[in-house]
Amino acid sequence: MKSEIRTAIILGGVIAVGVATLSIIFSTLEPQQNTTLITINEESGLKTQTIDKSRFKKAPELAGISGYINTTPEELEKAMEGKVVLYDIWTYSCINCIRTLPFLTAWDEKYSDNGLLIIGIHSPEFEFEKDINNVQMAVDKYGIKYPVVLDNDWEIWKAFKNRYWPHKFISDNDGYIRYDHIGEGGYDETEKVIQQLLEERAAQLGLGVAAAEPFVDIEEFEHTSFRTPELYFGYKFASGRNQLGNEKGFSPGNEVTYSIPNKLDQNYFYLDGTWKNLEGSMRLVSDSGTIILPYFAKEVNIVTANQAELSIYIDDKPLTPDLGGTDVSSNGKLFVKEDDLYNLINTEEPESHILKIVVSDPGFEIYAFTFG
Image (cartoon, rainbow, N blue to C red; front, side, top):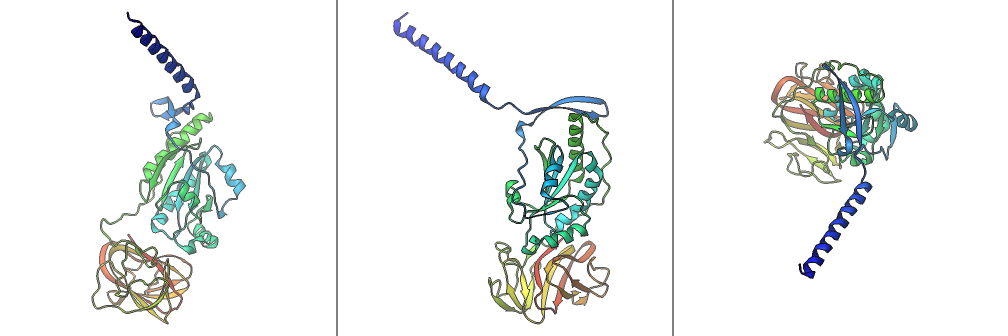
């Protein structure tokens, strides 16, 4: 064998041994997979299972909190230790968020003694939702007993890389996010995850594992397939989805006198009177004003601020109780008392109508229409 070939073979062997040695060294430096031995109670008996948690992300720390409701910083930190935690990112004037609250409060009552902690992360959409007194009003209104933290600067929202209201994340008792759900619905699926993670926790702690309970029995809101989309009155929120039908349109920061045109298009709103164009809303400046909306839906809600009396009409007739929402009186009047969401129209099936709102209180602000 030629010396050159012999040298090449020896050199190749040395390199191979070196690579193998380095591989062993570096493999010992890699973090070990986080595995947890659990016991799950099934109808067929006990089942031992190993879960590799290295593929899950840890829930982020709750930083930048602007205020606490139903808890204190010290109480919340202690309550989170070793718990299955459901983080609910919501805001109180969001109709989609509101519809999920009966399920959340029911889960809190049903599972809190078994190791579930629900934390409401209140990330506001509108400026008035940053006021802790307004959030406290909503917490009382909807019977929320679990902790709620104010995420006024969206730091928690960003830490979760969130983009939606509502959005639920569930972490296990080791702090790993095991499930998330966007929007309404999926309640049975979500509750099943809660039960499974509580079973894991109980098995780890040697508490024994209870049989799965029936899911909470709450009627779920049925959405229509086609309906008028959400409409925003603030020029910042309406950017890219302008549904203001008046010819003058938005004029950021200015007071504009609008008039109702002869032709009305479906899913556009129209103003009459003088209104101040704000980032998040329209504020009535003149002594009176009118809002007109041709819509298709079975439920119509408005998000408003500042006290006012509104007269509600459907197809140029005073709103009657058979169409009126939960916040409208029998004579078609709505009294705005707090900065909140109000239900104007509620019908069994989606219908097409022209909604008219007459306002006689300067200073009234409207932020959005939402539909169901």
